[in-house]
Image 1 (tube, rainbow, N blue to C red):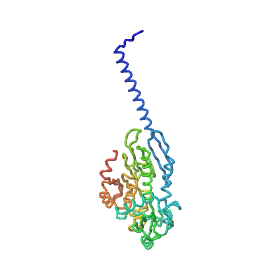
Image 2 (cartoon, one colour):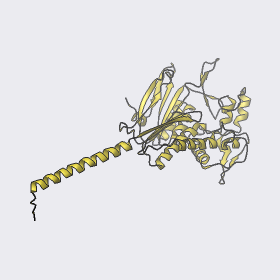
Image 3 (cartoon, helix red, strand yellow):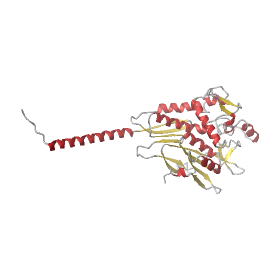
Image 4 (cartoon, rainbow, N blue to C red):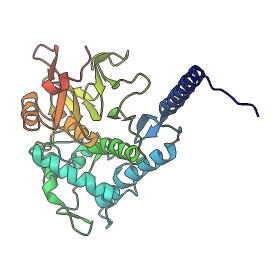
Length: 350
């Protein structure tokens, strides 16, 4: 019988070699897993009269476009004033219909913003929006008597949501319109969907309203987004770039939608002041708002377009822990100026 004599140095060498092989294999597997986690999926499409661009990282490259389109369709069927058989269209036509959970969430958020802004944000301004020719309804020739007659049934205090899910209107002519907040809400719904699927790194953009989750794993950096320059829109000029992580950004702008009074030369925007019933006289060109929820950012961006700068500052001061803003306006000499809250500045990239 042969006896095998083991050399200890050989055993040590073999053990080291095995360790190195295992280490290399582990690193290879880890790299492969990291590569799988880094797969970028980019979806584009049409939604709510505009377009969407949605990016996310998924380990198995799942295509969520059908689910996202279904989310958008559900919002439209609930709150689009451009769809005759939507819930909101039926309510505006005084057809008895029970609201869905989407409608109720947006209604309650609208009441919250309406209360916090002294009714500057008012979804019942829709009848005035239509009368002035800014909505789906037929434009009419407006005068003070017609404005006053519509103001009588304008005001969110004239509408209530009953416990059984039905809307109660004090006046049948009251017209609800959630367009100032529904797009941001849609962005939030898509973000919630991703989080339910354990997709942590995403960038959702619908019609310019944005919500970012996690990071851009392509470069392991926060998501980068930009704000249009209001006076250089034709050539794609940008006025600011900022980094976003687990935050939403919404921008409202009047630089494309305004008219000049031929008698006074004053600038009026396509935002209706719910207190006066008239288009808002404003030197504000755009308002970009940062908030945790895109629905909040969207709603308050609209508020700042319907307010003068000093009123906007007061609102921002009262909500300093919840949101920040970047407001562009014209001074008395027609020069472009900026008002940026300290919190917003921390997101800007020089």
